[in-house]
Every structure is written in structure tokens, then in C-alpha cells.
Image 1 (tube, rainbow, N blue to C red):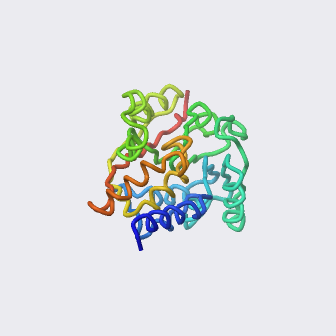
Image 2 (cartoon, one colour):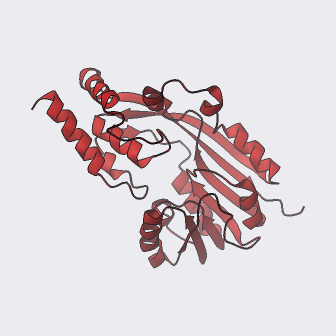
Image 3 (tube, one colour):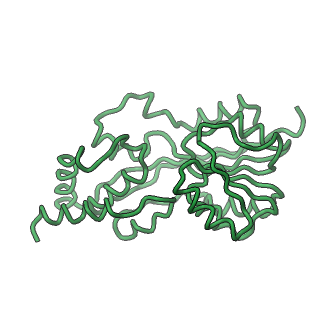
Length: 257
């Protein structure tokens, strides 16, 4: 098999793979990412077990919420992308959780003080004032988020060097300031950078199709030259290495104003 055919076959696999939800099992053996030391899903599950009413914001396909051993008597989730809404509903409805279709930039469709726990794994944006509004006094927001310049070795391979304000746009210090401005007390904030490896160009294609904000407007045709060069680099030198950025933030709404 020639290099050209191998390249085309791998790209075709990356294009054909479904992108709905946040199931990353397709990457098994093709890409890897270190996991943060704090264990978000475990911590989320522990908090859900103690909650009476919980909301998972931007739930994706509902996979992380569905992994919790116990859900509160009242559990809701929001999601803005229609294919994910359908997937999350199918996954969470049997657990007694309701999924509400709600755009990411819209106010949360719930009353003030409706929840004692709000969670979110890798939200595109965090609307801190809305989080604070729907939390009961004493309630908690628990979230793992993408940090600054995450996987930017790959992003900048395609886009070139990006300005510092873009590189630092998701800095945890900004999240702390925004949470406090919304009236919440930040009780935990931790950040880590984690090794990511892409073992073939198909994994790169699938990743950029799935995580669409990494290289906005990404298509194979638009970046075929760069993809081919990166394929040859991986074939010659081994996996392409990048580093993801993650931070954990836990914030609490004061019991008294």
C-alpha cells in the first residue's frame, strides 16, 4: 500500500466516524490523553448522591451524567445541539432525568433557586450569573473546564501562532473572577496540563470534526496539504504530541446575602 493510499484511507476513516455526543471510544489505539488527577466523574457522582435537585449544563450526549451511580430525585440536563439532545434523552430518560433543549447562549430555562447542585463538564461557555441564579443558597457549582491554550500545538499547526489574548482566553483565574463577580465563593480551583498523542492522521481529522471550535471551519479539503504533511511527519517520527489544559472549579452560593 502506498503512502498516498494509506493517507487517503486514514482520512476517510476520520471523516466517516460519527461525531455525536462525547463518547471518545473511537480513539482507542489511535489517540490518547492523560486524565486529570482529580477524577471529575467520580467527584460529580459523589455530589450527585448527596443532592436533592441537580442540573447538568451542556450535557453533550449525557454520557458523563449517565455514568453516575446515583441521580437525585430531580435531575435535569440542558443541551443545545439537536443530535446530542436526542442521544442524551435516550440515555438519561430511563434514569428518570429530563433533557431540555436549550441553546448554549440562552438563559437557563429554570426558576431561581431550583437546584442545590449544578454541574458541567467542558462547557463551551459558562454563564456565571445564570448559574448563580438557579442555585439555591448553599448550593454548589462543580465543573471541569478546558483551560488556556489547550492542544494548541495542533491548533497552531493549522492556524499559525495565535495572539496571547486567545491563548489565555480560558484561564482559570478569569473563571474565578467571573464566579466571584456573580456572587459565588470559589472553594476549589485546580489546573493541570496533560499529554495528548495522535497516532495517525485519521485521529486528527476525527478530533477536529468532533471538537469544532479547535480549528473553526475545519474541512479535509481546506487543510489537505497540511494534513498530508502531518501524516508524513507522524509516519516518520511517531505520534504528534500536544498538551491539553484542564481545570476544576467548585463554587458555592452563600447561604445568606
